Amino acid sequence: MHEDSTKLWRTLIKLALLGTTGFMTWSALQRLMGADAWLVSALGLVAFEGGLLLWPMYYQQADTDAQSGIAAVMAVIDLLGVAMAFGVEVMGNNPGMAGLIPQFADVATWGVIGVVIANVAAYIVVDAIDPDKQLARQMAAVSRVQKEIQVMIAKQTAAATLSGSQDAANQIVPSLAARNLADVMGHFGLLDGVNIEAPKSPVPLQLADSGTSPTVGNGKSTAKPR
Image (cartoon, rainbow, N blue to C red; front, side, top):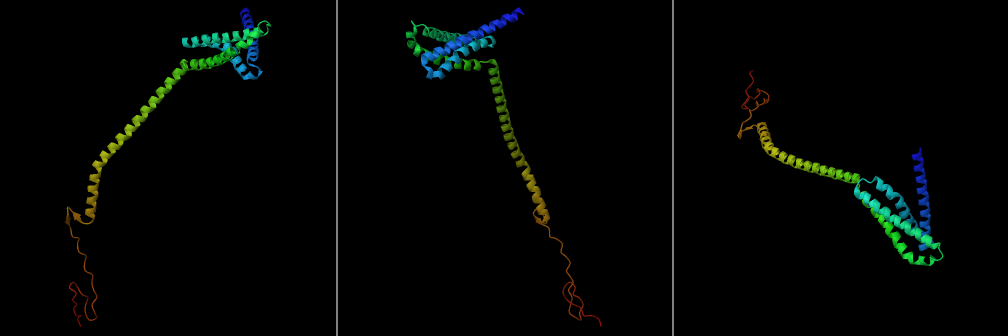
């Protein structure tokens, strides 16, 4: 119970501090860059306060030493940005130091640009070196290689099949052609190049004129008996 209460108080104090520094950061950036530069002020607030909140959490959950190192460096950079903005705001509320603020305008502008770019770059890097992402990329590369091998095997199989089919056709076609030629020759009575004459059909009977019998063979008619 005591541990839970301590954790709750720590969380509340952290939120209160982040709220305070967030307000001070926003006010300092508005003071340095003017009210019209609200977008730049918003980017600075997100980079400073958001980075100060998220990078330490990422540090605790990083999978590699490189990720932990990047998270630690970015947490320090964001802390320096918050400290700069906090100092500018404190100076702005001190009449004796308010005249020094315009001298920090250019520094603040380039500071916001640098911190925002650093946060974006760091996020890209820690995501790129994430072990899970690296494993996924390696698995995708293995899958691509396997597919390329399958395509290569399919191409070679198709080429071998076509070549084998051509060889088989070269062997089968002559025998088929010879068989078909023999069938044709047999159909027309040709065997080994010798013409076998077909049997003659019987000569039809022809009717003779009256007084004679039908002609037989030589076409001559015989007289009918009286």
